[in-house]
Image 1 (cartoon, one colour):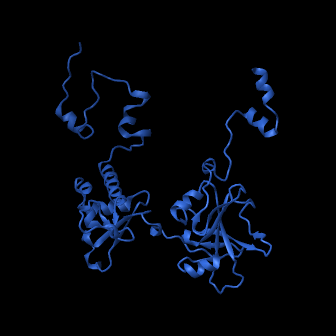
Image 2 (image 1 turned 45 degrees about the vertical axis):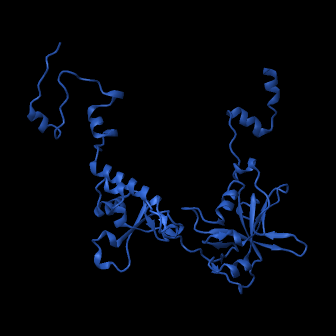
Image 3 (image 1 turned 180 degrees about the vertical axis):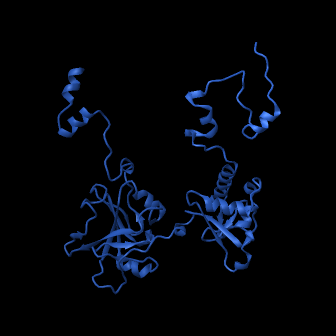
Length: 330
């Protein structure tokens, strides 16, 4: 039995800031073939080790996101009830002073400088921090600052205005109808949200296509890219939309498409029509006429790739009948 080896205190203090050196008696092999240098420095041996400051900032950022995700609007506050969540204004802004008094922040002993550092050093923009109006002389006071999470409101990240001529009721050659094209999968989501809107981080504007209806009822429309009809077309009577909802700004591009960066509420929809004749009108005059069949809701505009080996896919693509082969095997 090997004798115990005492390690001098000086060796402990001088070696790696208080870390014991490898034992002279027991030499365990590194797991998974890694060297001790790699294990101590981090993955890849790049010298990236544990950082107390970075881990603390991550914890503060998670706590801040937890708090801001659960804020409530001022209009929802009942004066007679006690509210645990923080109260935000109509644009989602919350006082930093209130945030610092939240239990999830106080337990971390975080201060205003910590919040500023977390917001400034985030690798991905998650929060907005601003000084409240009329507090220019109080920049060092947390109560004069406000914070909100990006994505809390649709206008938290403003999209550039669409390019094109702005339309009004007096615009020459104003299309009677414009249609928005979508899929069977997305239409129920649009319907439940109550408006056609841009996806966060998506395109800068919504694209509509002008439609002309002849006296005999025939439709003439500018088709979407690719020339294929969409699964569902949502119709908007453009003149009515301009008159009843002036907050929605419509523009026309050089190629004739109609664009808007604003939400188009369901109150402006004339009708929504499915491409398949057996489904027909889904929505009309403010009422839901039909639902998209459940079997179509999981299908997007593009077909899914078939599973199987290359030989099977090749036979299916060439139109060969693979049934005889399976029958022979049986």
